[in-house]
Length: 363
Image 1 (cartoon, rainbow, N blue to C red):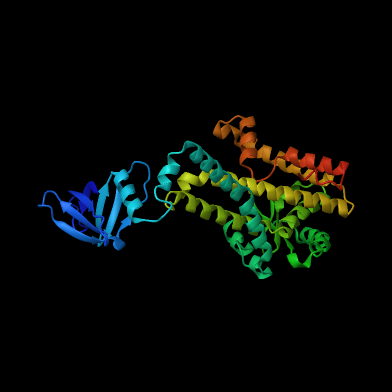
Image 2: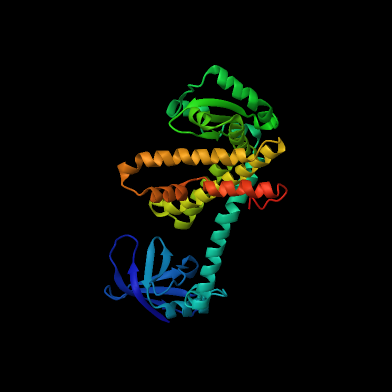
């Protein structure tokens, strides 16, 4: 059997025409014959040969060790050689599969389905399991601490000491309801109305959100929402999910250098989706707590309306600077927001009021 191709000696980049003679002897000797060098014969040991699988019509590489390489596009000859000297049942399987359109389509659908399941369910469930299995001290040392944020973002609160103490006293029994959370309410000054929980248990209220609330029950609604984030370990789970998403995309694309360019947008969309799921869970917890402590659940809807109005005021102030239409800015902000739309949160409150025992409001 003769297989024509190109030979590289592994020492230089020079390519020479060659042919591979397969001798059907008991010892299975191979010979490479250089046509432009008086047919130099190179005896080879079959046990040292590595033959690449066929992939489409790309040239086939046969390596002999010591960086020697024989390249050929005679796939039929190579496959015949493998049939003669191999007992493997998988010879040519890849080539046969890739040329079967039905199998290619089925494999593509199965692969995409598995990827979708991994991102939509596997990663969130894995992050949730890991987060709740980690020891408690992990959360206390995970992520940004309040001291770091104080240096980078916040200024000291301008609220009076009396007002801060009043709100901390009001919140104390609810913060201590679950001692494992180690929750503490603190106040800081910032550029907007906001509140969030850190993994170590600090719940931060900005001065603006205290001023925005029409009554203390609205502030308690926000407090319950942030306690929900701590209870369900949302920040820790989100960090774990982000890490898993990044690792999965690196494994899929195989390119670490261009991951930001290629996968930035889908990663952002996945992260926003996961964030909105966490926000809905915290919203529902807050509504449940208001109901449990016999407070009006409308307090949650009212503070959400107030936050939206505050956001719209900021949008209107910047409208003339960027040239966007107000409605376009509202839609864009809702699309990119990590929080559900305000109307959806109000609808959750209304559904809960109709039937507090049903989880339809959350779903």
